[in-house]
Amino acid sequence: MNRVTIDAAALRHNIHIIDGWMKEHQAEWALVAKAICGHPETISALSKMGVGAFADSRLRNLRAIRNNAPGKGIWYLRLPHLGAVSEVISMTDVSLNSEEEVIVELNEEAGRQGKSHGIIVMIEVGDLREGIVPGRLVEFYENIFRLPNIRVLGIGANIGCLSGAVPNPDQFMQLALYKELLELKFKKKLPLISAGASSALPLLLEGGLPQGINHFRIGEAVFLGTDLVRGGILPGLRSDAITLEVEVIEIKEKSLIPMGDTSLITPFETSFEQPDIEGSATRRGYRAIVSIGQLDTDIGGLTPRNPQFKIAGASSDVTVLNIGEEDMGMKLGDVVKFDVNYSALVRLMNNSYTERVLLPEPERARAKVELAHA
Image (tube, rainbow, N blue to C red; front, top):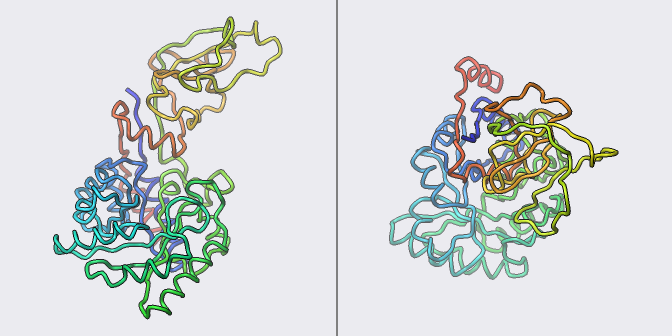
């Protein structure tokens, strides 16, 4: 069976590094747990690593967080839909909002449940995802800030989450100015500007992020260490927390290119890397078929740990690897390991056919990390 291993020691390391960055910037942060899809063992482990708040966009995952990380703050990341208002109030502490009608419903439901609910007002600053347009901000805020069961904790934005635009200081400065405007006009403090994500960490490390950006929602950097601006890995972070392990189900010497005519229409993007070898029509090499396919994950988001292995293609159920002119001693039943990107990880964790295994950290290693970051 295919399995994803989650290295608890690597996660603890990344959390401590990121937590240090946040403290230096005098900011708070919530761990975006979408990528692990409510995996109970991982949530429980993360809750013991100093994570103060979790964030997710699926109510089922939030239920798992509530059950496995008691006492931690819970943020709902997707704009609440009207049909989910009751669950949002009962299971979460804070939600991101841009629709006045929904906030009114949240207020009424919070009253029925005897609760107070925190919200972040999302503002559009260029990514063209959720958020009210700045020209309506004052009117919008005026209509909601007196609701008795709603606490407006601040304003926020998603930057670089849809269009791929790189976060820049001007966007964050806009948010700081909007916060100042609202505080001056309504004589009411807004504690948070929640606009930092993994994509903003390079700007933070360069010293280009305004001090007023004091809340981050970070997921990919914790699980994969990714630098979403320049590529590669953020300084000091580990990229080996997540590993995909799959089994070899066939290994044979074959032609390097398909025989006969090929169609322009396939169910998936089945071919990935075509060999650029003179005379490849007659060249042969060893190919291994492994037990992972397009139904299981984003195959384009997988990178074999062995740099000699190349993904030749994938169908719904299997992936084909070119492994070279020799069989590398590979045999049936061997395990091939892959690094994953965020897209591949999310699909793997949401796939019931994939086993998910938390690798517990050795006691000595955990103590060493805690001491290093004390």
